[in-house]
Image 1 (cartoon, rainbow, N blue to C red):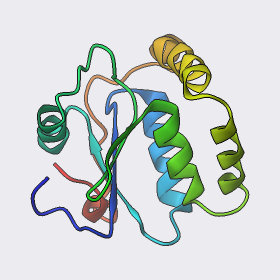
Image 2: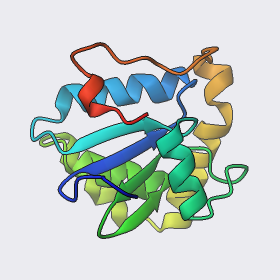
Image 3: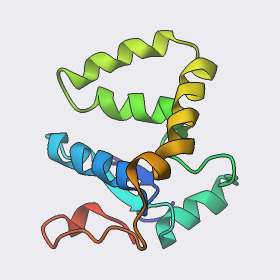
Image 4: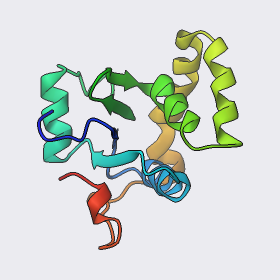
Length: 138
């Protein structure tokens, strides 16, 4: 992805999902080292990464973590990598890396499949406040 700072990590998320938006707000609040930037999957930046990495959004419509030097991490791996950067006690969730990815992703997929039913859906993507605008890509 062009013009993306090499020292940052980009979280791509479902911009109309209430659970996803709540999770992003949580990450913003706990990102004390200012590591993360954000973009909805539905945004121009999201679509650029989806196209570049040939991501099938029918199979992966969940969180993605983009790091310039490492590329894309998906689903539970992405969520755990994000948690690792949020400090204590969230970084303790890294213990779940011992669980095989297919099991972690089964749980993740179950939640993702039901997220609109359980948490609801917005009509449009979240619009960041002026204070947070610098953390979001369009």
